[in-house]
Image (cartoon, rainbow, N blue to C red):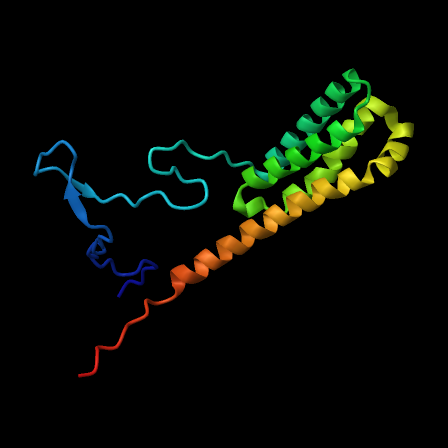
Length: 179
């Protein structure tokens, strides 16, 4: 008897294909052509009925947006003679835009990027030495922008958690009327 290292080859059946989607006729009207039903786009970046896709930023994109926005705001305010209030308002608006546009997986990046971008904008116009003084003088605007981003991010996260919880909850059955 000869010994081999190979196991006996058994003919296997291919695994059964499980179809999880309901087939429907294609839009062309040909009844012979069927394709799985497409799930409607869901999620925060989904296209609404007839509307365009909302922009979604990654964490890096959020930081780039706020930094570029604040550097441009600093240069613009420098042209206006150093309008500190206008720079602060633009900081709050830029922080809010970043918090609204960042994707749900990177929500933490918006409140972190806001103060970094605020300081980066000041460095480009005031220089590294005067930036510390400018940060101290404009601290309320710095905190307002950071707080705006943090509140928007917290509200978005709470809304997403609530929506997920409601989606998981089984439907409530009403008892039949007594009588």
